[in-house]
Length: 469
Image 1 (cartoon, rainbow, N blue to C red):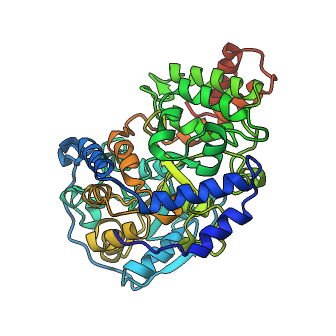
Image 2 (cartoon, one colour):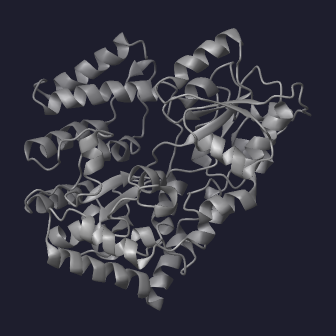
Image 3 (tube, rainbow, N blue to C red):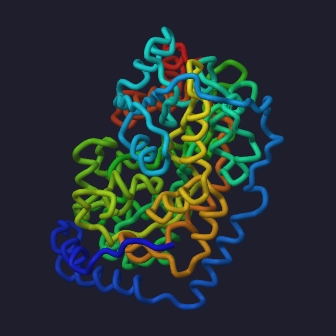
């Protein structure tokens, strides 16, 4: 895969401008040398080991079996209206349509805060309802598991066209009858993005193979957190929320079992871990998406941020080609596996029940989510696309490297997570239930709730009071 190269000046500025709160000039020099070495030195044995690892994680069971889903009759569709109306919560879908599809649309952009209320209103009345709309993972199932959206079969799309998609993206997109209602162009497996300078200053190592053991289990993570905290001003993570999804996705049961709120044992462990992190001062105690949390991405006081490629590329602004103002520490990061396989986020496209342009909507879905050439181009630009063959090939490409990750190929780390993710326990209310948990966990670690048992009771009551059971 070809990528845009970050010029040497960018790397120099990254090291000079980054606030070296966890080290000084020596640390900058060491990190620059380590970054240069990561870009120019790769032994044959390393390449072989990486290839073998990728092959082990791309077994046949990663391929979608259409028989797992309930397929309806494939409709023969046409457009009944000349105008195609699309609703989205940011500019991403608009840009994808403009870049990869010839279908002309009227794009109505909402915000993450307003998209649900707007959709609820227009889908209830039908007035100015969209033909196609995009939803984030936090609330997408609410619409897929409703009568407000069409099955992709009703758009003329057959399940045989989806054979290269990661199964979890389709598990997520079904209704209660196991009919697929939406498609995603991206998969969002997650890893641990770590700052090489901070790793060198706090752990004495900076290369992925050396850093990986420090995150291989939750016990290792906690010991690493204590080691990092020994360096004044440094923390392993900025916010306790950074590790939440990794633990959440390791559950074997969902939030609601047999009509009652169920707390998986791993979530009980999360209460204890979050409390330990707070009591021992092992994080910076920020909140995700706060100014302080964002600032920690570039001030070299935090070892790691946890998430998928979109977090690193856009939220952390590590990819200079995708950001007007790149992170000054771009090039000084690497990625290793998290203690557990997990995903975060993603966007699904769905057709509303009012869709009068089924042929055009189906074309947009195919252009963005299925077309191999378009997906390859997205992958070349740093997207982890929803196509097993494309991502496996990139993972096996020993010549592929991202300069903004210090010359590392991140895909082998993420492939295993992508193939192991199981979304079958997720419900349409999970986003709202997770919000309730966050409130209770925060109260517990701050000492406002006395015990884990009391915290769990408060959580159950909050979920029930919110009508989420």
